[in-house]
Length: 176
Image (cartoon, one colour):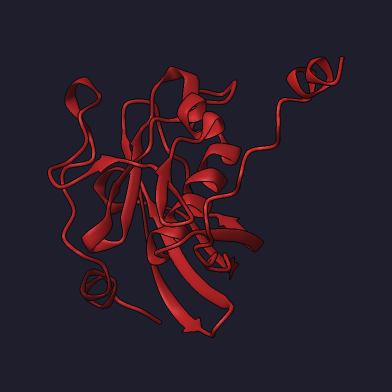
C-alpha cells in the first residue's frame, strides 16, 4: 500500500485548484500541438478546452467550466480522456499519434475546479513512447489514472522547394 507521503513525493508541488477567472496557475501556457516541429492549434481541443500546459514540469490542465461538464454537473469523462491524451504529448518534441489510451475513472472533477494531469514516460523506443499518469482535482483528489502508447511521428527530411504545377488554364490558352 502507498501512503500519502509516498504519493506526495511522486508528484510535483501544485498550485491551488480553485482558480479565479479561469486563470491557470503560474508557469502554464496555452497548449498547442506540435506537428513536424511546428505548433498548430487543434479545433477540437480549442472547443473542448482551453487546455494549459506547464512543459518543464510535464503537467497539463484546464479550468472546469459549465461547457466542460456532463448533465450531472461533473467534468465530462470524454474531456478527462482528452486531457490524458493531450498530457501524454508533453513528452514529445515532434508529435505523434495515440495508439492506445486506457483510463480508469476513480473520482469526479467538479465545475469551478482546476483539473490537472501529471504523467511520466515509463519506456521509450525509437518509434514508441509508453506513458503513465494521473489526473487530480481540488485538494489533490485523485480523479483518474491513465496509461497510453504513442507512435512517434517520423521526422521529415527537408527537400528542395517543390516547383508549383503550371497554371493549366494559362497553358491551354497559350496553345490557342
